[in-house]
Amino acid sequence: MVVVGAGAAGLFAATFAARAQRAAGRAVSVLALDGARRIGAKILVSGGGRCNVTHWQVGAADYAGSTAPAIRKVLGRFGVDRTVAFFREQGVEFYREADTGKLFPITDSARTILDALLGAAAGAGVRVMHPAAVTALARGPEGFRLETAAGTCTARSVILATGGQSLPKSGSDGSGFALAAALGHGLARPIVPALVPLVLPGDHWIRGLSGLALPCRFRLVSAAGKVSADSQGSTLCTHTGLSGPATLDISRHWLVSRLHDPAARLLIDWLPALDAAAVERLLLDAGPRGILAALKPWFSERLVRCLSAEAAAPPTGDLPREARRRLVGVVKGMELPVSGDRGWNVAEATAGGVPLAEVRLDSMESRVCPGVFLAGELLDVDGRIGGFNFQWAWASGFTAGSAAGGADRG
Image 1: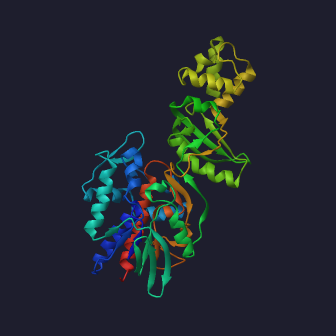
Image 2: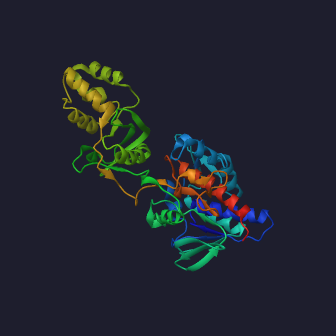
Image 3: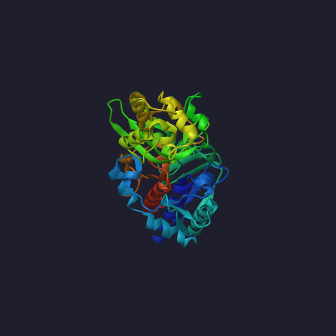
């Protein structure tokens, strides 16, 4: 058996495939191929180098892409408790970040997680070969033929766990989509960056507030006026636009929507802790002391002056009724003129991919090309920030590996 890709999902799938072969009383024969010169580069940079392995509470609502019932079924096969137990077997303990619910290794080092994955794979008898990018994959009379940068090999079954297209320098360069398509799979499009910072026009005043962080809420509003997606949390103003968890979470929805609904608008609520009526009362109560006095407990003076300018409202002195209404509108729902995103080299995940409708959810085996199993980011499933994409890798990798290893005959 060959596993294409030795990232998070690939190593997990390879490990459980080898364990399944051994449990069935067969000789272990699992080869994991990867095109990267350094295995696990994406794991090592995740979570700021700490590797947010999962979240304490994971559900289908934390994901986008394929349908919630399909995602839920796969997640249910390998939950958070089993993830923690697996890594504990490898000597890794976790702590829960109080304000986010993210689970990190107590070492605060992604290297701990990569070493655990490699150790588990080696212990199960998996062979890892790299750099050995798979350039072609085709079904033959006795299985599958794989062309790689290191030569040709054959296998009776294959697990595709190549990753998506985010952070291509790590080896996740989108090539897996071509391999899946060559076998007959369709791709849910558009395939766009997910968990990626958003870019604003060069002269936008938000870019001048680089380094400012505060809690905000984003709402994506369709041309018909319906809120199609929202996110809330820490938001960071940058020299190119906006970043931070709330921005990253809304990014995939914005990028997908602008292709299907070009008139969709992205709005930012600068003060989600208060509703519009409460903000208006703040401004009324300030009276002649003005906007700066009213909003000082909530915002920096730089931001207040920018919001005032956006609303064409004087920052000091009495505030006319129309100016006050404009300012409330800006604070609670300012439209963002997003001009783009930071791209694949910065994105943490991929939106789009092979639809779950094309795999058997109890095994992750392809309905299109039996003998091929799929796992991880190659599939049309992407989670919000917080360890959810890793949990998808563990759940889908376990399911694919266990089923492929149990069915494999050589």
